[in-house]
Amino acid sequence: MASNVSEARQVAFIDLEAQQARIRPQIDAAIKRVLDHGQYIMGPEIAEFEGALAALTGAKHVISCASGTDALLIGMMALGLKPGDAVLCPGFTYTATPEAIALLGATPIFIDVDEDDFNLDPDNIAAGIAVAKEKGLNPVGLIAVDLFGLPADYDAIRAAAGDMWIMADAAQSLGASTATGKVGTFGTITATSFFPAKPLGCYGDGGAILTDDANLAAICESIRLHGRSTVDKYDIERIGVNGRLDTLQAAILLQKLAIFEEEIELRQAVARRYNDALADVAQVPVIWDDAVSVWAQYTLKVPAHRRDAVMTALKAKGVPTAVYYPRPLHHQGAYRHYPFTGNGLPVSEGLSSEVMSLPMHPYLAEDEQHYIIACVREALETA
Ligand SMILES: *Cc1c(COP(=O)(O)O)cnc(C)c1O
View (spheres, rainbow, N blue to C red):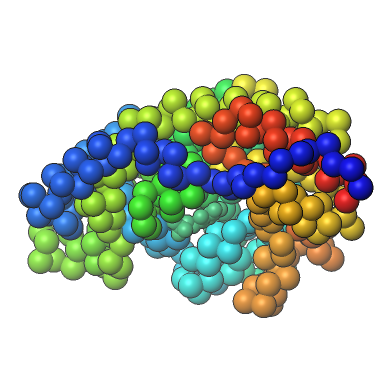
């Protein structure tokens, strides 16, 4: 079959090298400063980075930690999660979201997501609470995930959640905002990740806990450091974890933070070009009025029976794609025995076989993007 797309190229799914090339001297100098002062654990860059993140997000307290998963764990330890408690969470998310709930002996209850923005559907919260009560569990909180970089509908979630706490899993959405505020201020506690491929990534694992609640912040700070008192370091007040962020990672993150807001702008241009060029051949991501996504992923919905063929055709053209997530969590072996609402989660199940993410990063050149767009259009029309 004749191809509209002539010369084949190889495109990066996420291009961390382009970013590194841009700020390499600053990164090298920041690493050198840490090697020179030698304070590898809780060095001065930690407090500096936490302060910078508070300034960026407007959160009153920022506690850096070892990963996004640890941020969820430490946050829910601080909230006192325990066996007999239930926490609602979406069925369509990364496996780390429900992990800490189960690790703390509580019960995740999976509820369905919205078919347009893929985030937790506030209309399903009441059903999740009812399931918890039927099982004799105490519904204490919920985790809302800002999937692919777009904040969940926190106003509606808060209204439906009553007196339950809200943990915002913002691993993919740091830097995003809505008409009512910035990510980091929506949940009782917000957890984020600096895994290298996230919008703000370090060169290893890292994460942070953000909250406006001074009491919860002090407890998180203590838990991060083996539960020790924040006033007397020889006094162990509670069971904690070793959950610190490395000084080296904080030093690297400070350099990346300096260009982060500009990168968020660059991501908007990339997403806009995709949306304009693909809306007539696939279901493109929705963006609510006045919301700014950070586009951790740019994800299309394509017909389930054609997705594999489309992905194979794109791979042959040097255009990588990925499926986040190929299976909803209530179908995963480790989580199958936990409760979910209704007879299943039809939207989560459908999305698992329809979603396809395209290359997305701030340094995607316009000509490169035109190539991707041409390949996607061709694959959708012929594959
Ligand atoms: C990446 C991610 C996490 C976990 O972050 P890590 O830093 O890899 O531990 C949690 N939730 C979601 C939605 C994620 O995408």
